[in-house]
Image 1: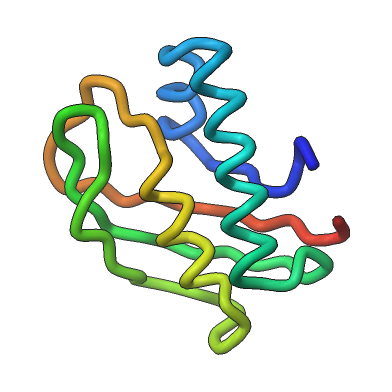
Image 2: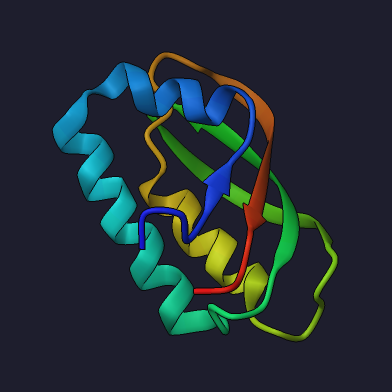
Length: 102
């Protein structure tokens, strides 16, 4: 379950900055989101655009989804709700890769 979702770039760095307990909570949220909305055996890449403020993301919208209609857009939006952002602020792009095979 550890590799259910890999978040690219600065998103991974922000998880490292928030500490072990929060990272474990986030990992659990990722697993729940993917299981609830998409098939864990399939892979997908989703690009979100969100507003970062006060350590959280809001107003997220899907810019790209290479597996349209398979629930990965909903899974990515669900993950974004739990994604710790640290001190980042403003409009940011959040790439998410769902590797599949789980």
